[in-house]
Image 1: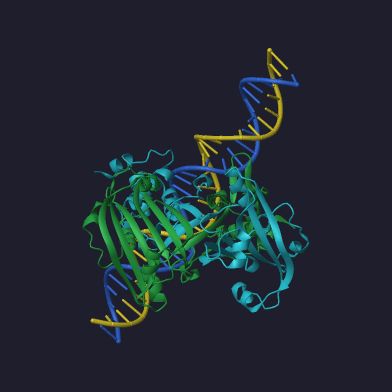
Image 2: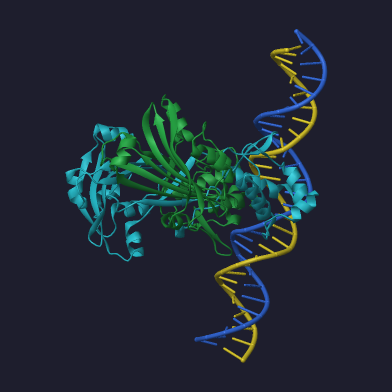
Length: 256
Length: 256
DNA sequence: CATCAAATAATGTCTATACATAAACGCGAA
DNA sequence: TTCGCGTTTATGTATAGACATTATTTGATG
């Protein structure tokens, strides 16, 4: 089979050369035809195979490298990357959106609100010094008047001073923060816990029922922003995500 | 402040024009200086500001768009994107790796193994027809002889026929599959459940203890590969992930 | 044989240009 | 006013060439 024939019979019928090359290479990697460690053709080889300029194949290979599918080294060429550790991507739903989608009425209620000084345990979790002033908010999220989540949040007033004067009467703290302070780093922990009696009462479930706890800490350019601990009641809720390792962009929301 | 002055005083001292422009724009978006909806300079404006060619600024903006930081529309220009729904990325650890890191001995035991025909519930979850032949494996993962996870897995023999003859005596099914069959799509569900007596016995925990359940279904180019339901005992285990929305590539493993 | 230096090969970055395409804009007609 | 159509503008894709950077390979030399 000649080089030009190989180019023409490429499985992809994409409109653009870039997409055609990319689809072909991705298909070979994804199908296992090119296992991890397999050498990817050099740029000049792909140029010849597809009859295009070097810039075009360079863009393909650079993008694949940025997405972690291949690794590139000068002089040595490119090889298929080792599969990264398994990675689960979960979409954390906005309660109001989720409720609207399910045809339910969403409402939230702020149960407690105080400005507190950070205790040693919180200091360790956040990396802030003990005694830092934090806005502490306890929020209950209701869907059709049924508790959907119990949220305990600390907001670092050093990073977000305007939170101190915010009444949070239209948007819940999480939504307000997301809009106001973009984050650059987030850390998530997911755990399962048995509800104690206080939690059970607030979530209207039985004491001992299994609850899903999502802890999220976010930073903005190194500065701590907020810590949220969201408890989902029993087996009423779960987190769902769908993920493609080679997706060029974010996964469409319809997948949620 | 003149345009050239603005270019020279850019906060970033990166070596390459591309990085300098990108760092500057990302910093403005991340800091909130350019909120969602804010117009990003046109390509020709950035060309003038940084004194470079259009290809260079085009690469910057295209990459930012691919990463979801901005949205671009012909004729209208680019604007800072609305923050996407919160997204939690969790690294699913390889048990052997995790054990090694913690200085523990990892071992797994296959409790049950059978070739079964898919039942209606499974058919709905996987999208395969009822009666499809699946290899069913029940595996217990032990760390220092203590149960660390209980795994129920179905492997589609139509996609992975060689699994039928695999003894799984060196690598557990998940690791074997990851190496053998790269996946293109994965769906994850995370839930909390109370352990029933059978599960409690196998995981050596108390009946009713909260367990974290991770269900993962993977496909390869539309063909179903495997479904795994991994139950982590009580509060012994949790899932951790760290994530940057603007990261050019995958998050380093050291963050785990 | 071991070692250092020069040639070489592949990727990394950048330029200047060209044409295609989508969408907003503005103008004129109904 | 509103609708339709051509114009304008910004992005999308692609090219050919240039020089920089980094490893590897090779060859000369002790």
